[in-house]
Length: 110
Image (cartoon, rainbow, N blue to C red):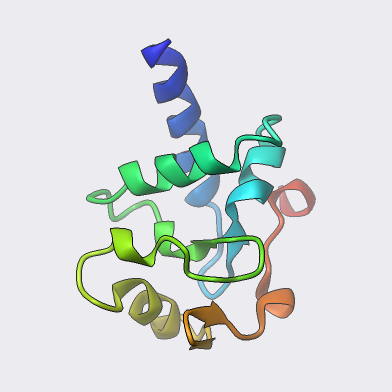
């Protein structure tokens, strides 16, 4: 069972690495792409487990309405927001402002 979880996390991380700079996706979109549509929460766990690996842009994964729901898992007060803003993503009140315009759907893009 643990191997299955590690394999799923690895697959989530592989998809996250493909999210272009300045774009965002959501947990559910990654889960759907991986054939596990009801596993958005597990994708969130995988993103949390990725901290410490700077090759995985976990900051580009937000919730289904563009909220920075995982921000408390990042070091510092506003690191997730700062990382997004450094890529040109506009964030206000913990929400991506132009979410529909910069949304990256792995099912369509890959």
